[in-house]
Image (cartoon, rainbow, N blue to C red; front, side):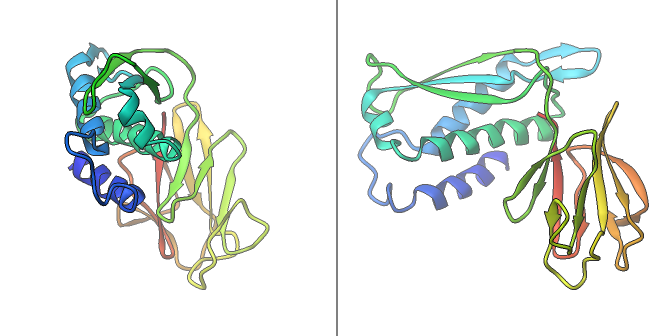
Length: 215
């Protein structure tokens, strides 16, 4: 399911460039599949549960790297999302922020890819990710979601109050509080007043869905 989702996104990004792929050339979904396999093989166990590698280094051959030129930033973003979604599906946790790096290895042939994973500690910066593609850093100071142009997360919809809800970082993660909105704030389909959030939670405010990324 994770790979199917990333395949759909990558196809939309690269469909024009790769409408006629070269024979034996490396496809974006193959990189994602290899990363997921390596992450699963190298996972570690801890008292908090299975831990996923958070730093992924990918090596491509010169010919494949050239094909991705100009799209590498988009590719990295989608591959990082693949790592996060795989962790969510498998119940993995991270020791630090997720990072994917791509390098060129002159010895690799067309279609070949090498992946190495690493566990690198560090403080993760939670993000609030909207279904329209926007992303917002969550800090100790609450960020406000609402219809007003003066709030941090503007949702221009009549079903959304001017100051609808607030999201902030806590000592244990991320929390959301409804600001006495007219139509309510929903988490996993249930109307809430205030609640802690996990990456598995689906937040609905007006027409938009939000989720939390912790790494």
